[in-house]
Image (cartoon, rainbow, N blue to C red; front, side, top):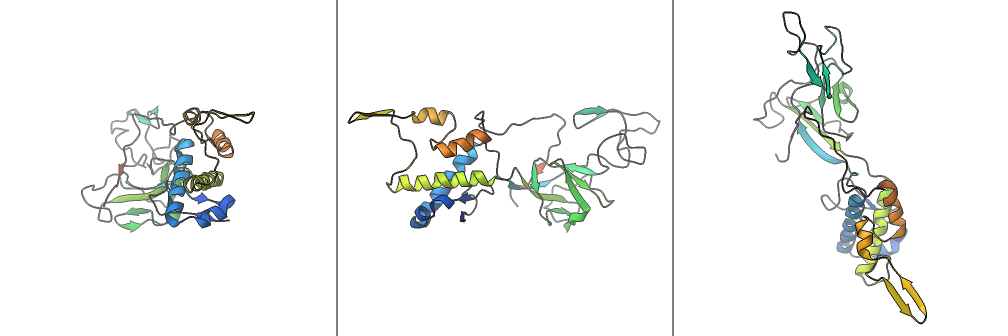
Length: 269
């Protein structure tokens, strides 16, 4: 089984193109043609399945934590509670275990925009020091929970680069893993693209609705109709697309909340 890859950002994040069904066609093509075909197959399948698959690396600098063992201003000294919102719900008590835990949240956690596919062993650092993997865990694909008795910083200095004193940074992969069946479908499309580019017979649809020749009539669906459904015209590939994206969504669904924390994303260092 051969898996053809090209360096990022040629393909969507963590997408491979598997060309098992056409090794002879692939091997005969030039490197440039292979790259172009892989891009066509991967981007077509990525878009056709709602742009949902493919974990992308992201580096963020979280600010604050959701819960701690102290009142954090929610419990005043004169003995009454102040209501607050946590995860979209109104609460009227403090966090943590010291005063009696009355939430379903861990004592120390920070929110990361998910879904979190994975976090490298060196992905979490505080004050430039790597926090070992046995000191934290991930809950719900979006919460980074501290488990070693310490807690994440409440604030950090965003004026200095990560790695300095009073900094907190997390590098992780955000998104859904690409199912292997989509990689094989992308490879099938890539092979058909190579055939079309080299003038060989291929299965990609043409703008033909009907042909009458020597008493034989051939009708084909218009390409515009195929594209409007988010399909490719290659029946085996379109069956996969219909299974993963039956309603033809153009992008993944999103839900926004006014109390969702705002996370600073590092785009250039």
